[in-house]
Length: 234
Length: 288
Image 1 (tube, one colour):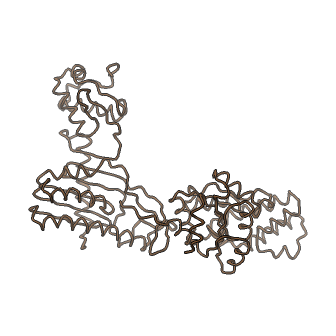
Image 2 (cartoon, one colour):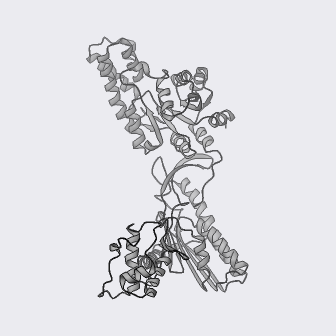
Image 3 (cartoon, one colour):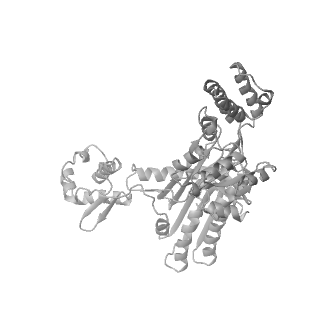
């Protein structure tokens, strides 16, 4: 196990988890490209002239970002609402990340609070956590600001919001994320960073973005958190 | 405390129970309903005797009953008080040791693994070894869940379902405890310090949800196993499991009293019946 990881986790008092990636794969059963197509349909229904590039976008969050950038708040809201509904549906068929639960439970066991900071809607994150009996373990849940995609990560604002709610200072928190925008947002917020590379090509990308440690399994985090914890007798 | 004692009621002349038992029942009810709160001083013996129109000796017998149930404590010269923490975890060890003062000791345990029993027994057996306790016979029955078959608890948390790896870990714990109890008691028998020792372990396929100790058939300790989620390391891999938490849970103590209708007597009797019923039906031998 990486000594850097042990060192880093030893220096922090709270863990901030990105949701889609470190906790689950939210679009596992309801593919993201399909959601993107549905959002593009919403744009068309609202009279937007959709470029071929946007029509081929696979990531629903990018469709939202693009819509927000165009500046029509009414249309941004329509896309936001459609995305929130799709994410809620997706949360029902989300696939838990291997050892994601173990990290959340182990952190709580050793007295380290866990928060979620997601570019997905807070409602979908909360629904997933509740359905998996984890709602009591993760607080706060900071989801995407409503119809304001500029405030998504890499904007540090949602990360700082979680840090404040935890009563911590940024330097004593670590964000675990699987995308470059997580690492960038965390660095801008002044929190420590762990990259979770759920696919091999991500290792280099996360390193390049400045992740202090990159892991390829959430199990590494759980094991380090557990550390010398011994089984109790009964 | 002598201000308003209406809650103490009056004796019922038609009640066939002895006056001391009637008085104990009324005081017990007052304690359990918190009209007499933890730490409160009970009315003095002369006050109670006057109130109920009985001899002081009768009141004394009533208080003896409550003391045996550990509801009250007496302080020399200042009277009787409601125990500060009537619900507090009771220590098992001193009671196990006390049970060894009888010539024929029987201990029945039902629960997850018997780790607590093993450790408590170790102390009592040490005293037998040095001659400070000298029972003639010891018979221990251990009734535990068979972790080689599918269980609802412990379970894998993610799936809320049985998991062989989770059970394997639990089985190691139960086996270690059961073997420990068998070895400890057998050793004393082998040394010739006790005329007869028997330890029998039986398994059943129900999940462990509570623990129960029956000492000499007249005292019971009972506690629940709350379900807790924990990440544990199984074969080097972290796994979140729904486990049972046995350590530090409060144990509730019940003891047989002279009164057949008392809570303590009835709980002990029901516990014995429950234990024997499982023991003699769905339970089967553990072969070590």
